[in-house]
Image 1 (tube, helix red, strand yellow):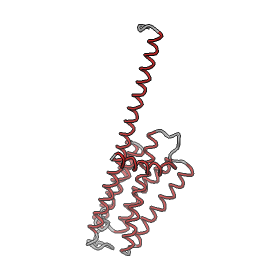
Image 2 (cartoon, one colour; image 1 turned 60 degrees about the vertical axis):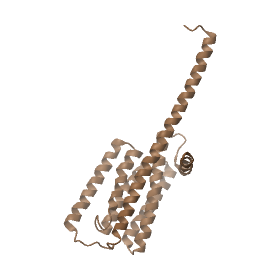
Image 3 (tube, helix red, strand yellow; image 1 turned 120 degrees about the horizontal axis):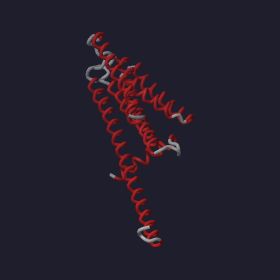
Image 4 (cartoon, one colour; image 1 turned 120 degrees about the vertical axis):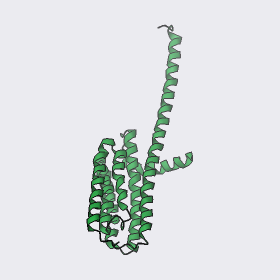
Length: 229
């Protein structure tokens, strides 16, 4: 398992080298790496949705995952050029929040979209991990508001028709959406915990080496000066 974790960290480390500055602190490196990690997973998921929607002949929902991939790639290119991480972080979290709601509105309602809006929960969760606890509050409020608005329109405008998606396919999308959300959150937290444990181990090793050097200095001083001095 240690070897697998090392390989996984090595791959992710190579991918993140181009966006991490040598002057970054360990905390900044971790936040940037985690953001890239989530962006990569979301783009893979968007590719899956794109293929399924396209195969079902749903042209409008197809353009949204494709648009997400294009905008996500553009923001990454802008970041690589400007090194403005705040802009990159804001745009990526915004995409995580808005895209699932746009997909739902283009399909119909909570049922026909198979609860895809749950993926928008990644926005406040991501903001907490990438930025901080206080900064995540507005994103969570926005998520709740958009969910409530979607529920309001579903309640008053729904006609009991699942447009564009056969009822037999709806459970498939429920499984897909719930699995994607659960997997990304699990991997995000798992990677965060792994890195935290690594940092703690490194800090413990540095403290041990510091103690060793301090003991050497004490012994050297005792050879030169009396103990009471």
